[in-house]
Length: 543
Ligand code: G6P
Ligand code: ZN
Image 1 (cartoon, rainbow, N blue to C red):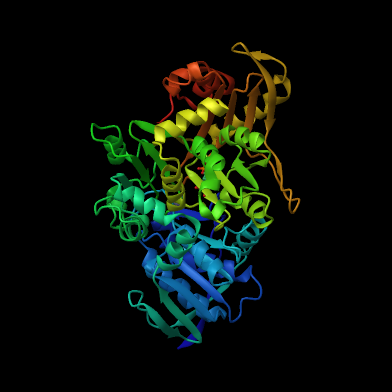
Image 2 (cartoon, helix red, strand yellow):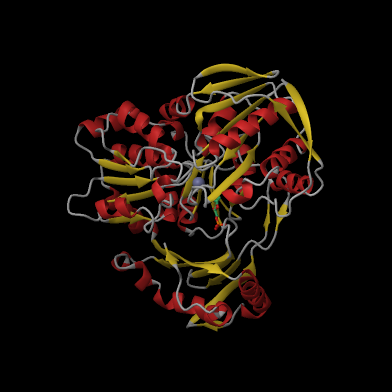
């Protein structure tokens, strides 16, 4: 086995987005494309000789091929050990868990998250640092810069590793350890949550459905929910990970998790419904005929976290991405803990978590998590809910209503305009930016504008600044409209419009969200001139 140095030339566009490099599989399959990016990652890191790299992905098409290439390149570049999930599988939160648990140097996650998989669909790769979280921007910028000047990569001239047999193998001078993808993660969950109380709840007849959407959480959910917590077989649906996710779109929301939503709104709805995405970091929570928005879920988990053993000592603070509703801020205020508003993207929570400033974090994009790992964590959120339900002995809807009664309700919805022409979308955002300075103090649709800005964030830990993170228009009555362009798409541009309104009066907490927000929705189209700028009268997806 010898190390080969292969000459190469740069590819354009190898710039990591909100969450790593995501492209069509056909792009990744170009000769040297993956190799260039992986070598650029290694070239941007220092001090990994002899250390451990964790490698795994969500099992989508091209996962196994990419894992083999990465292992051979890691060996050729001097890593001492690679821990790889059996079958090349590791959920994103499990990668984070394994990195932390075994003090690895870092990890490579192969996933395009909730985007469809298959030969004509998406693939993705990202690097996670030793704390277990996605690389910060200074690292991803360095990786991108390196991709623009790369001239060679190193790879071991060797046969493939057997990814299906647990245990150690050698690859050149590197040891490859094929690990059970679930073991470390499940052990961590047992430490955080009251498994006895949850098990007793299932024994008492509590029913749930967990939709793994034919993606990576299937094996995790089966082991934890069915084997360890005693939920009946069949609790986990679509639990077999498939390379194309069964042709579906593994995104746990009301549109894509249709099968689960039908069960939860049907005549014999179980007590809890939950789903996770392609790589296992997102979650959706449903009760019978009840949908909990991710923003409300973060607020409720913050208020109830002390009920879980791992959080019994309390929550240091809570962070949410800017477009996430401000429901959690109200909880933080009442609890007397800090609330942080960060740009979209889990990586922005990393410093706050490392510094112990926050315990819980959440995003409107179906992400919730805590300081137990450095990724958002779908099954963790489900277990946290199970623990809260077991401790409070109330249903999902009761907990939701009681929460609104205590803190007020924030009606919240996101409207996505997908498949826009990039230049038109940019133009819409620039025109909005141009208007901002004149908006403050004016009245729009009967509401007075209290704040109009382009969100900029200064990290309180390292002082780094992120600018142009989305346009916020806040009104004096607590209503808010936010505009930003998606950073995760692989085709065209997507405009996201986030609309919220605060309602303190419990007599007005029932009712349809779209109706409750109707006037603001109309206003959101007007302010940005969405029909004029991008030729759309209505969004393509509403969540
Ligand atoms: C990924 C990140 C999340 C982020 C989301 C935003 O899922 O992991 O942290 O919230 O992307 O996606 P968007 O398409 O709105 O940029
Ligand atoms: Zn994901």
